[in-house]
Structure formats: C-alpha cells, structure tokens
Length: 127
Image 1 (tube, rainbow, N blue to C red):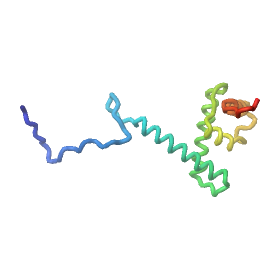
Image 2 (spheres, helix red, strand yellow):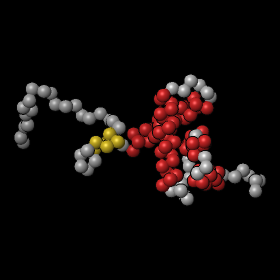
Image 3 (cartoon, helix red, strand yellow):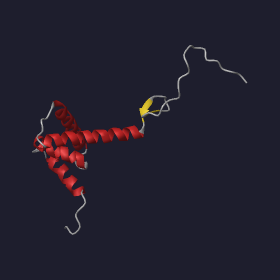
Image 4 (cartoon, rainbow, N blue to C red):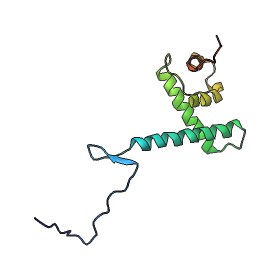
C-alpha cells in the first residue's frame, strides 16, 4: 500500500462546507435549486416591500424606484413576448397595476389584466 505525502507546506484543504453552489458536470459552480428558490423568495419579498412603500406614500428613494421600474419592465417584456397568453402572477399584477398609467392605451394592457382576473378562482355562488 502506497502512502501519499503532501508535498506543500500548506495543510490540506478542509472538506467543502455546505453552500448554495453545486458543481455541474463541467465542474462549473452553479446555484443549487434551493439557492434559486431562496433568491426568488428574497426577490419577491423585496418587490413586496418596495411596492408597499410606494403605495403608502412613504418617502420613495432611488432604490425603490429602481427595483419597481426594473420589475415592471420585466413584467412588460413577458406580456409583449406572449401578448395573447401570458397570465400575470399576483405580485406581477400588483406592480403592473401600480404602474398602469404607464401602459394605458395599449390594448395588451387591458388584455393582460383581463387574463389575470379570468385566472382567479370565482367565489362560491358567483356567476
């Protein structure tokens, strides 16, 4: 049995700690599904926070404006890419509705809102 000796003056690296990265088959670090899920939850919380700030008329800083502007731009890109079929999520609808004046007059706006409302469950007893 051969004994391997570590030839450098440095101690061996400790075993890797659990992280939000995994190695792909090409040995590139990629975010794990859990990290992606956590990132989405963090983004959703951030969007909700900034939207609430804007709705309450709190002092709106440049960060809030940037976060909401970027988010509504992404929502609009989704609508434009699928103008007859994209259904907004609850959060997308909330932000899109907040910015509705920006998109007024565009028939895709009314269609996107109608699809959102048509996708929502109907209360029992409603027609």
